[in-house]
Image (cartoon, rainbow, N blue to C red; front, side, top):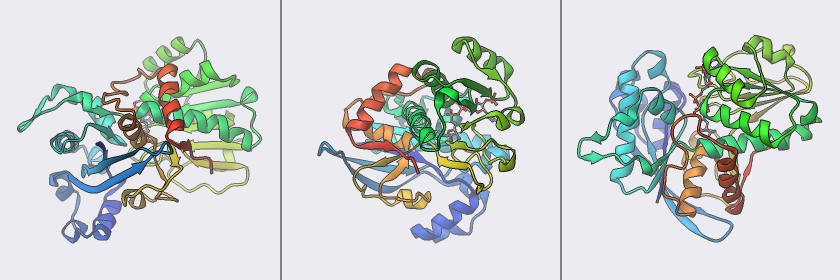
Length: 339
Ligand code: NDP
């Protein structure tokens, strides 16, 4: 059995979903209520691979909301994640993906130190961040979508916003080792980590966001921002490919500008319909087939019976592991979203 720990993108979103799912007692409540709400299993899932194998899973809503970080309710935020993990384990789930902010909170607040939640002794081997598959899928989106827009990677400047993050650094390694991308622009705030990444890659220009955006043919957004940024598309190159892999989205506005294409980053499409309600709730265009790559990672680990924390910790994503998860992704019928 695989599991997914997820959360909604804002308080407004959470209230609307609670109403739709038939939890009216949650629908009119403010942030304080969500801070004290316990985790819930809200969906039972069946997925069939193109090999014919079928697996079962559960979706655990952690009741975390990004506003908890924005308003410094750190204790509530960390409690949400650790309680959701204990809930998943207590319900017999063998491998669970920590979606969206769950893994970021786990890492940033050192939740690995917490071994016990009431009577559950947490077994971290049963959890994966799903970030290796996400990094692989975004890397393939770059490789496959760029030529569709007339962008040749060997002539292209690629800006990675969130380059020093777990997913961002994996994408940088892939671009460096597996492609002939002409130039990489490394964007994040902490200079020390940027210099360490530049040193590891042996290339890449460290720039601020404002400096990088007008120079880039391809912009990859994988910065862990609780709220999206506003950018002026008139300042971008044309053509320009924007791949927004953030959850919540890193881009604050819907961009409609000739020559600028925005792609939903880190999203996969399955070849067969999946029997679930949850992707409808997070507004996927084709909810029966499209899902977050990190969630798909827990499915892949279940299909392969790799019941281990395949993606864990920070900045350990290697090109070899991306290739390994990529191979089983293709085998079971997942492909990167390209439109
Ligand atoms: P990390 O926390 O490991 O990395 C975040 C990166 O963003 C760091 O480089 C950080 O560096 C940078 N960053 C944060 N804030 C800013 C800012 N304001 N300006 C510029 N850079 C910034 O995150 P992950 O790699 O785990 O996740 C990245 C994103 O991907 C998140 O939005 C997450 O929700 C999403 N995600 C999507 C998945 C999917 O399946 N599609 C799966 C998992 C995650 P610094 O702090 O130095 O600025």
